[in-house]
Length: 37
Image (cartoon, rainbow, N blue to C red; front, top):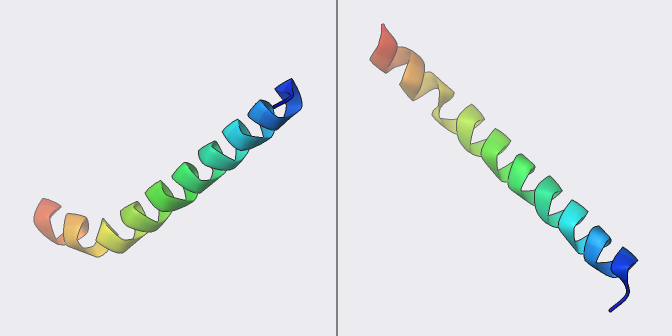
């Protein structure tokens, strides 16, 4: 694989991880707010 292919895979992996984290934090946000109150 070329260097740009590794860079592309890295960017995609970071984007997917960011989306997953955002989805999880958004999903658990109501529960977290209930626990903090």
